[in-house]
Length: 282
Length: 154
Image (cartoon, each protein chain N blue to C red):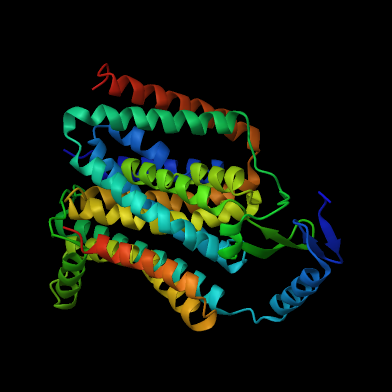
């Protein structure tokens, strides 16, 4: 039934390393590979979303300690991602198997979005200037101060368009719950592009949101009886340790090598998901 | 006007009046004077140790399984109705000395899932007690209610 423990462990470990090194997250690589070795996609999704709690909480702790993440903005956005994740996970659970292609195609779409983000290396602005904060954001007190080590300065910022950001985050929550991923890249895009936050703050705040969002999704999969202990254990162990190793390696290895390798991996996985969705691959 | 303002070691990325600048300087001074271990630091340890504990328990469960069965073919679905019952059964099994690999791994999953939950609970206490912020009291309460409902789902 299940692939053997050690291969699951090895695959999850690799996914954890790749996810941490590229900042794209472990789940997006893990789930397509798990389905390739015969794990039913819904069980793969359930195991992945649980491991997301571990990886995000592990790194979120470092960021919270450095006071980079904005707890207010994070909490406000969780108000939208949590119901989104519950909805998304519920859809994944009740979706009949003959409609699994919807999951495969959604996966391909998210993989391709991540692929092009990595290809064009789109990075948010370092210090976006907010000319005039809108009323909702001001009412919510969306501002903060963080210390930037590289320039040795205290950066004082404001976030904008809280309402639009919240609406977009609901959608991102649905994707996270449906596919069992952290969807960090999407969360960061919402904060960077819509709410005009500095890339440093949005990356760390997104990590903080991911854990809580993943919990909401996890409980849906748990209640649905989709959690297999024999799958969750190796995935959780592998991805978490892989993420720790990946974060360390990140500093040592040259960025361009990883990028080329990862671009290739993402594209092949997207192709696999499309073929699977189209019924060519079983 | 579309320029960042820099005062000493502070950079302001929005148009600020001189009064606002004064407030910001006071805030930065306040942050600098804070102790290393305040609530934010404590919260970050909750997250980190929660995950580490869970990882250790799950690994222990796997090791016990190998010891008892001489194989790594763990294949068991969790069938309990919801997280609350799941928590209750895993705790009672582990603490009634009927430690099984399944119960240990389940307990690890419980600890893992409780970690972000505790994080939200502590933020709620923070907004209520320390910041006395009514808006965020309600925002966090909403998140907490949704999470609690999802844990009791079914």
